[in-house]
Length: 65
Length: 349
Image 1 (cartoon, chains in turn yellow, cyan):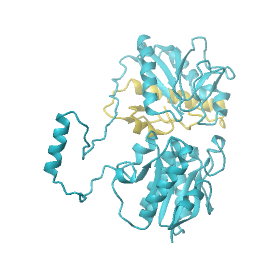
Image 2 (tube, each protein chain N blue to C red; image 1 turned 180 degrees about the vertical axis):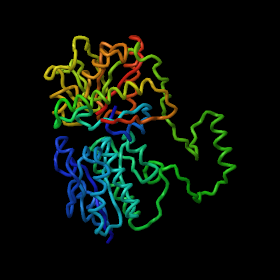
Image 3 (cartoon, each protein chain N blue to C red; image 1 turned 60 degrees about the horizontal axis):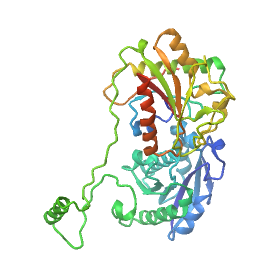
Image 4 (tube, one colour; image 1 turned 60 degrees about the vertical axis):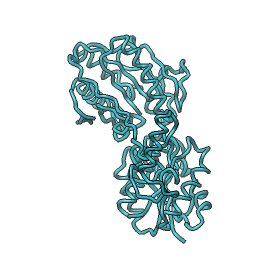
């Protein structure tokens, strides 16, 4: 899970889930706590699903929140 | 006299350190920071402007930042574009690469930048532009600026550029014809090399094959509901007294910390980030922004996965060499194997 997806691709990460920033990957402090929770819950869920997904090449998984 | 423009980040642009990393693109007439030394070293090129942008702004808003810089340049007259040197600063190196690529494509002006071989920007951009082999840190500024000036001057004047080895840039994977002095035919050269190889003597290949360091793709976890998941981060979240004394930059150490007592977050104040490469305020206020323990516990309760491994693992990923990172990764994975961890979520900052 990372913000700088191009770096993750360059260094060879295989399952990549985007986060929202460098200092706060999983919760923007300028948003309400509920919104941060929703984002975190969604993206961690995507990451867990990614671990259970067979892939044949480096894959950036889509996030909706 | 030819004209040049120089790109630097918020630190070298004298705006500020990590707290200013969101600084939005700006153009200044004249010389700021390393542009002064570069301008002094260049005999036939004058640096007319310095462009400054925060590394985080560029990393998180790349398209917008490049568009604004492109707008700055639209009415400028310049023959050469410089960026950096970026040393081992990963975000800065990638910013230099992105800006240089945009300038080459949109303005058809030659570009020069400089990075250390451990900078991830090298692998991303070396085939697209001249990246000089730079030093590890700003202590090498003078040397790196001199090299940038030498190559930049040639490019600005349209002079021929020598091989990667002769000029000191990272090979771009391009081959050019060249006349050898003395003119030894290829058949003789290859037999000379073969003889050296057979005699275990060192020889220099004429066709270096770049080494690709790819990690094979791990198979999918078959049954997530029975899987043990571990959390690992390069975001530097550690107990507040940093018991393992992990370095805040260029880390060579990592730590493992028991989290079995924590239900939904590491308590702020008792845990903090020691990472010197980003503003720690958000992470220290709520460590969940880096280590999403609340979400992991929720999925654990729901039964989406079996259980969260009782330790998490942390190091600092700024200035950390790929070599050290790989070693720490191997060491951490020994513990993970021993604990029968099935899969890992890594969060990087």
